[in-house]
Image (cartoon, rainbow, N blue to C red; front, side, top):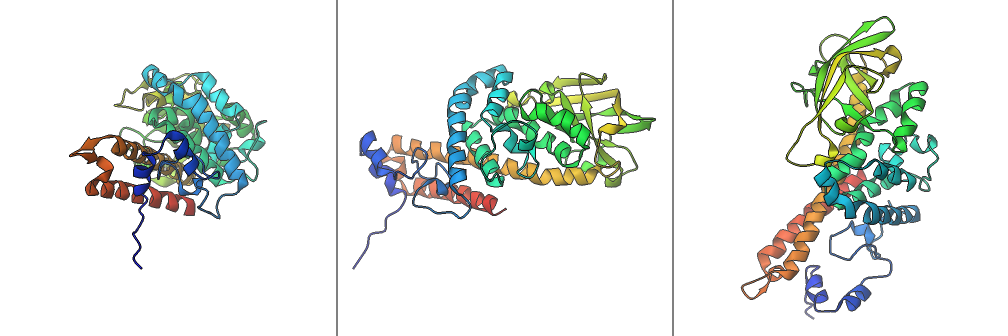
Length: 359
């Protein structure tokens, strides 16, 4: 017997010959999403079983998608033009119980605010929310809404004193205050150990002078989680501290109009003789490099989740366009080279998502 191989790429060609009602019936009742091949992670289909995801994750996925579809995607264009996200959007994200999830499953964030955490909250819940939020396909909106919180607050939650944590964290988690992470400088980007912003100890406070560049959310921020030099050269002279714009004169911010991601508020920050209480040190003096590296692990993982969903959005748009556009008497998807390109895109997106889950 000879069997004709059936490719996943044949599915959209067949579905487009059906009316919308028939196409919807072609999806399993257990499927989630719009059914575009590779338009969502493979565990969204009812025929695929993953040990990573349980009913709590499916319920959370529905909660995330509803919020993104209703509160985020319809506003993306407006927020891009305005170069900012309205304050009420942060509050709505908190009220939906979503905002606190982006600072890590082991951070204790949900214990600090009266929000409903998902059952058995873990890092897969965080992955799902970031992935669903990235469906907005706007780096500016995504970073504007969660990035300052996701990378700026964990050092407070994981290393700061209980007093500082209680003072800062709840308002940030509830969307009432904005926090940002300040590491990069004009002369020290990837080479964190070479940063030059100086914090000189004077009695019960530090005096900070220096500048930071490309700081996400900085133009909107109330709080600044800042890497400073309190000791000698290299990594062993770096400390982390919390600075507050309203109560600490000498902090100035200037928007950097980049080529895109406008709602994220990329900022140039200057510190001019800023007096910071010694109690605002995060962790131990001269041990801030460890805090930064620990924070980078979670931060970079979140970036990969975002980037992979953006790639998936491009794949989904390319797939749908290939079903509409015709050349040389047939649809793009019927050309072998286009099918190969789509397959190669799908290979990279699916492989990356698999590795994220394994991390």
